[in-house]
Length: 130
Picture 1 (cartoon, rainbow, N blue to C red):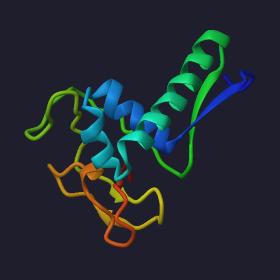
Picture 2 (picture 1 turned 180 degrees about the horizontal axis):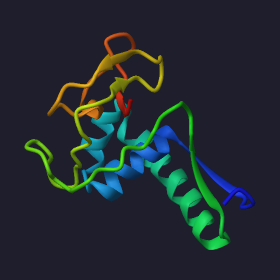
Picture 3 (picture 1 turned 120 degrees about the vertical axis):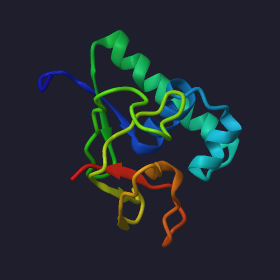
Picture 4 (picture 1 turned 90 degrees about the vertical axis):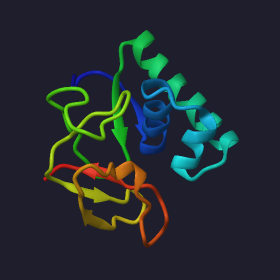
C-alpha cells in the first residue's frame, strides 16, 4: 500500500459518503447533520465520488485526512439497542471529538457522537476510540 499513489479524502468528503451512500440518508437530512447547506453537501459529495472513482480506476490508495482519528471496527451490525439501519454499535469506550476545534467529551453509551454538536463551535462530533 505504501508504494501506491494516494487519493486523499477530507473528513467532510468521508462524512458525506458515509451519510449519503452508506447510510442512505436523504441529502437534505445529511446536510443538516453536517451543518452545511444542501448545495454545499452536493459539491462535497461530487468531489468525494470523483476521488474514490479515481482511486478505483487508477489503482490508488484512499487516504482520509484532516485530523487524528481511529476508525472503529464493530463486531456485529446492530448489536446494541439504538443502532438503527446501517449504524454500528462501536462499544462503550472512547470519546466524542470535534474534528474542527478538537473539543473532547466522554462517549455516552447509546448516543452516537455524530449526532452531538460541539458546545464550542457547533460542528458535529466524531468518534475516537481510546
